[in-house]
Image 1 (spheres, rainbow, N blue to C red):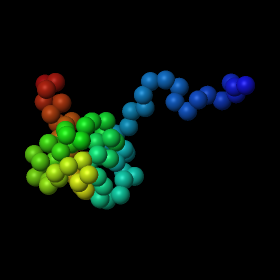
Image 2 (image 1 turned 90 degrees about the vertical axis):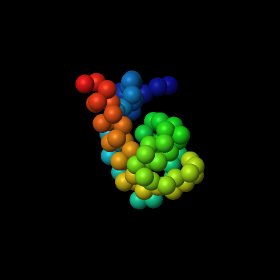
Image 3 (image 1 turned 90 degrees about the horizontal axis):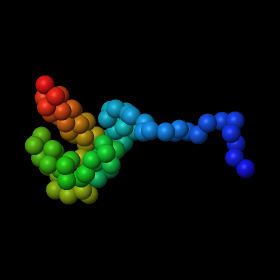
Image 4 (image 1 turned 135 degrees about the horizontal axis):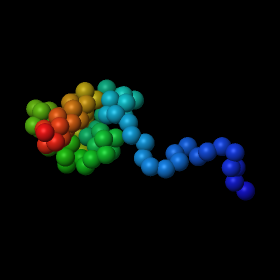
Length: 85
């Protein structure tokens, strides 16, 4: 039997959250693949962006700071805004 009195947690569509909110609960130092998963992108894209920002990370298992993940996301948003203009 189903309980029709209370709605399901996520009733359709996708929940949109900001990167700051998505990365806020990560420890200060985390791995590239975790940042990529939270941001909904690939580890390769995160590694490329981190390299452009001067961060040293060589593989998805490399450790990076939460702040570096946020910088990467901010850079992506700036690039998108430039493409739309």
